[in-house]
Amino acid sequence: MPNNPVSDVYRFTVPRAAVTEATGIGDSPVAVQGNFGPGTAGGGQQRSAYAWTPPGYDADRAEEYPVLYLQHGGGQTWTDWVEVGYVQRILDNHYLRGNIVPMVVVMANGNGVDFPTEITTRIVPAAEEQFNISSDGDQRALAGLSMGSGHTLSTLWAHPGEFGYIGAMSAFGAPPATADVEAINEGTKLLRVYSGDVQDFTYGATLQLIAAMESRGVNHEFAPIVPGPHSWDVWQKSLIDFLPRLFTEGGDA
Image (cartoon, rainbow, N blue to C red; front, side):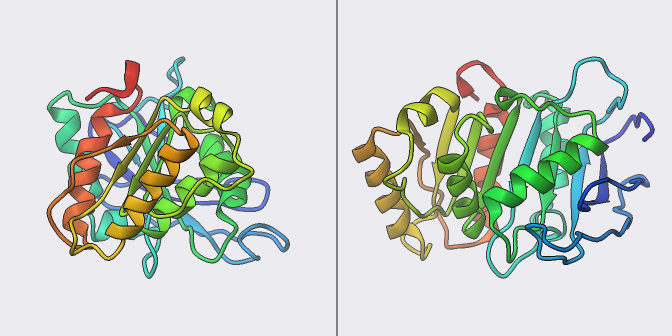
């Protein structure tokens, strides 16, 4: 993969055992297709993902890039953060202003799978095979909106320490009884929750999540409410706030 002076969005495949070649052209995503094999978390379906790489991305750089795995919501798919949420514009603007650490952002298909298994055994290995990104939990982030927040939090409860930075937008859920709170707190540098206002139909569920984490002693931050409903305007503003907090000491923006 070339070292590009501008940011790029790549489409790559997440196969059963090996990753096929990915290519990029300027600002446009390009297709590389592949299949999950039978018995994978993806149920044998064809699965793809997008990856945003920062300007000057160097596939041969000695220091691996930190990586954010960013998930879509219900009724959406892996393309929506790019095609509806315009995440590349958010990232480009933050990067040009020096607000974020150079990172790779992976957006994969979270539909119809056991997501904690999918992310840890399929998506992450495929991304690490294809891109020069870190496998260190302190250099990995996981975030999602609505259904993607549920996927994000369920992965945190099941695999504490695998992703050091966690973002949950229009979030819901609660730590299960089996959650190892000590391991979660020790392995998580930042757990930040976002919500729209009372127009957001998950607003009540988000408050219940916050109460449950406080009751269990899970360290977290509850960001100021973003005015608006269950919508991309809320999620874009949440991401704008979240990105500068990644891979910094203490998770401060």
